[in-house]
Figure 1 (cartoon, each protein chain N blue to C red):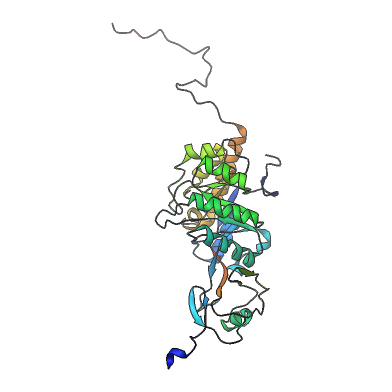
Figure 2: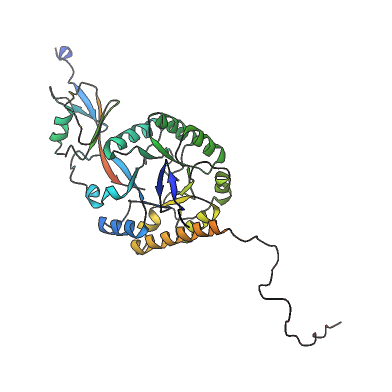
Amino acid sequence: MTDNLPPQATFTLNGEAYPLTPGLTLLALVHSLELDPARVAAAVNDDFYAAGQLSDRPLCPGDVVDVVRMMVGG
Amino acid sequence: MHNDSLTIAGKPFSSRLMLGTGKYPDFSVMREAIEASGAEIVTVSIRRVELKSAGHDGLLDALDWDRYQLLPNTAGCRTAAEAVRVAKLARATTGTNWVKLEVIPDARYLLPDSTGTLRAAEELVDEGFTVLPYVQPDAVLARQLEAAGCATVMPLASPIGSGRGLQNSALIATVLDGARVPIVVDAGLGVPSEAAAALEMGADAVLVNTAVAEARDPVAMAQAFALGVRAGRMAYLAGRMQVRATSSPSSPEMGVVRLPDPEVPT
């Protein structure tokens, strides 16, 4: 009867699939990663959130999330 | 040299040397090198945070960013779509709408994709970005990027990080001829004389990273590049002499002390 169970909802975070906890928001995700939301920026699908302005947007199954920061480079 | 400022997207700069932040032994050397270079435009990259051990990246605290025009790049992007996404993430991360656009499908030589770069540039200009595209020294592409509204064009001297110097002079000259935006020679420069040569040709600026960061003494090399860039710019403004096929004596030809002509053997 496992065929009738709903598939585990996932979202993509920085290229990898993660199980989606009900009620998870972008801001809560960043906190759970122990990141300072003032120092990272994020995209949820094609919506972009500036450092310091990450919202409590609820994450949905299938969302593609990128969380980035500034690094050295040329 | 009064008021010989470099203007990019309406913003004046007194330095014509842009510097990258990669590959320094540590942040302290990086900070001193940037200071010694006099650079006002400093590049950074944008990367996904490490999820397993995010840790703390010190770059944000390593410099007084208010003193610099931050120039995030799209390094690592292989397609126009990736570069557009990273540019938007860069704007969200840094607050600047400037972006050094790199679309590079080729990892061995890090050569840019011309059509992908143009496509991404058009989209980013439409989105309000100040776009500084990294390209092959291709005059036709350069004119297309200008027409698309790019703030500069950045032709490569030789492959990124190679230190092989100004290998594309003849092609860069065709990019410079008739350019309507600043031309920044980027990538591959190894020593200050090559930066000077680029400025002497009429390039408006150069961007350097590895040549400084991998020097034995990065701080001294940063200063040396600053001097090279300044020398090259001054020489360009001063106007070089004409090249001759034969010699032309610098001492007067009159009044030369002579002995009788030596006998010519017959």
